[in-house]
Image (tube, rainbow, N blue to C red; front, side, top):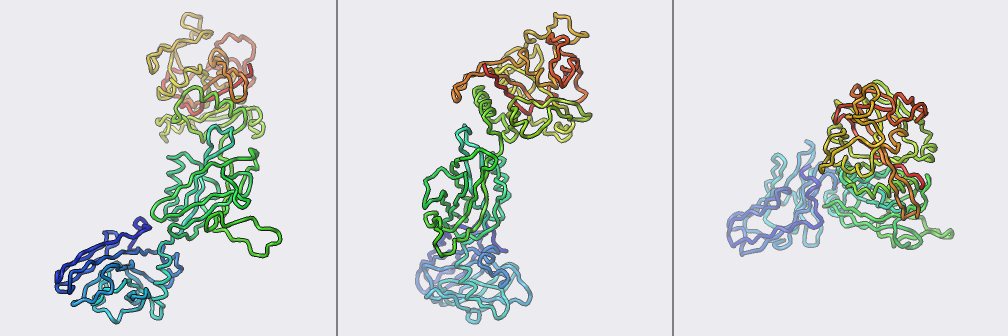
Length: 547
């Protein structure tokens, strides 16, 4: 069509012009709407102020009016305010955009009279000419308005224009619901965002809101398209155990929402989650008008219930919310790590209860060739933003690399992440000038290393039990004010390591014949490598133990 939705506005711009007596003048609208009115010399008997607006019409407008099959095409609508119904000494030329139509369609010029009624004046205007995507005609009177249609014989053109003018600010709209936890999530609140989006813009909005704003798209949305009018108020009524944190009106929870054509309208509000179980759910019904207009129907009411414009559901955001994971999150928050290092979509709770409920095994085989690693049962994972280098498709770290763990002290976590998430070796100087040393209780260059093992390497383990030992993940006391309890907290990194980049060796903590982890032999608990930067850190693990 000759117009796109970006130029649809709530209030059409008024184009004001002052034309001197006898002067030739050309009146134009914006470049997007492309209206041109040429007044020849001696056309205006006296100096006049002429102003007009342009009401844009596009294919979506015709669809909303339900007449896209009745009309091939339609120009924008020109409405004169000052200077309307002006009789001209010489005919003016009016040029309007009009896309080509079918060969058997006819061009019809309509004029609006002083009573606001549209009438066919095709036989009263002169020199109607079609050229490319424009139509031109001459008229000796500037009526209250003009519009041009391409349609078949017998079409009620006046009725069509009346329908369009009523629906010109209507758009096909889809409602999208986004959500995310509001921290601290143990308070039971999430943030919901509702957007009424033009149908053609839905995918862009979903991409922007989920990627940039880190919201989760509610399954089941966007809703099927409905027609909404400019500045129309609609309401969302919630039925279930998730509802907005607002006062009830007429026995129901809901929010009001106003739709605007010219910009995306976002409504954010707090939502209370009353039931933390698997059945936490609310039906969301969208109705025309404010929520104050609706009430719960009594059993004896005879009237038919109102039909919603659209129906959707809302559930809890993804991500763990069990008490153990929340306690681990409270400890993680004490580490002072900026949120940009985290990827909440990959949070996961591995506490005994959550692990058992999922029915997951205690270990997994990953990589090429496959290698066994433990599942971090008893820990809580906080997803990390991957170092961009590991997004390289040639590396394919999550499919081809092996899984392992690296225990560390709580104060080292932030330094490692700030250093591009690279694990360093003893002797390296970390960001801030801190030199790494071999941990106390671990082998040193002066010790008798097993088989001449060099301690100046990066050490990881397929066993979370081994990586979580005191010598690696030394415990830190954590006083949890929320629960009034004290814990010993440990931290470790969950990572991918490149196959063939490391060697496998025995434990080096002096365990002797005492098995450390039943999943592995003590002879295969350490993986060590000189390859710096060959470990992709994707999870921060936290474990809490009662003091």
